[in-house]
Length: 239
Image (tube, rainbow, N blue to C red; front, side, top):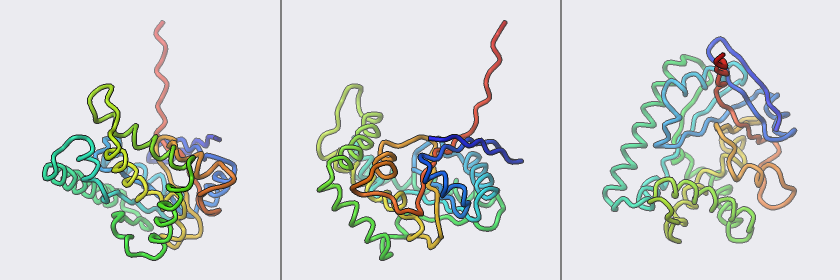
């Protein structure tokens, strides 16, 4: 993973494209996708504002997509009763939407759009890609293992210490991740852009599966991935 330090008048982020191919897509500078998870404190409106402004300085267009599918299933899997899980999910999704709207407004730039994941459910490209994900989860043990690993990590952070997710809880986590994966596979097909970098602030367990191997389910050639995170200034060492 190569590192590109990109400084703007707004903020400083380091961008780490996953591979040389991802670096090539990044360097084209055509489109940046920012994926936002409800309930994730990393995505404050200030962080999103800075990231959008940074993105528009280096990319022709920026889209922000937030998850709103199967969020209630995640809260049920974490132990919330049915109605309480639905209320908590709705609250978190609405709060996420407000933060995104505020960030887009404060960024004040053209070429920025915001969407809910559910906006794409009826789109043929999304249905095709989601179908490919579901089929691969049944036939591709490497993809299945990485997806379950992501779901397990999410759930363990919300379960009692030392507890492992039950099969039904793990299935809910996989379902949530599968709904998002089309944007890691082929954002250009979904948003009608020439090429795209999907970014997140950490490398995900699925990154090497979708962007690093030579067989199985893989990202489209015009799809890249990069870790994009704020630069943390080094603290001076005390004498």
